[in-house]
Amino acid sequence: MRVLITTSHRPSVKLRVFIKELAQAIPNSIRINRGKKTLQDLYLEALNVNADRLIIAGDFKGNPSTLTLYTVSKGFIKPKTLAHIILGGTKLLREIKDHVRIYNPSTLGIDITGMVKNDEVLKLTEVLSKGLHGKFVLKPEDYKKYDVIIEIQSAVDSLCKLLFIEPRTGRVGGPILKVLKVHYFER
Image (tube, rainbow, N blue to C red; front, side, top):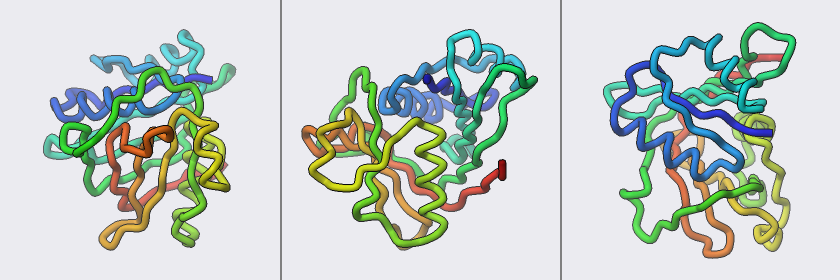
């Protein structure tokens, strides 16, 4: 159960830094350079490294703007799209005071204790759980069972914010994502 992370074609410098930080925060992830690889090539690469998920990050005017999550399984000719997440902004680690680096995480928890009670956010948590192999955290005291926690916070000007938290220190350990909208692909 691995996650392959890459960019759209011709990524900006900020997008390359973004996926590097994202790959450090997502357990069992592998970051590769896209180059001229097609979606079919990425599918074969994912199968080659035993990844069952694929994330492609895109940018607009040099800033990270989308994340597309795919499932990868043998027997198909291309990956199946889970969701297309539209971002309204990101904060990289260098822009965050008192951040920490997360090294080699293997478990991911998704905090739903203080979650915004909204159907869209609930659907997003389900997609994140499925797309990143995360388990729901029902009590704050369960934080210590995981190497990384995705904390979902309400936001005034967007659907929500996603923070990658290092549970032992409680500090941010990955990019902060402002989610504007999510397009889901039915199964």
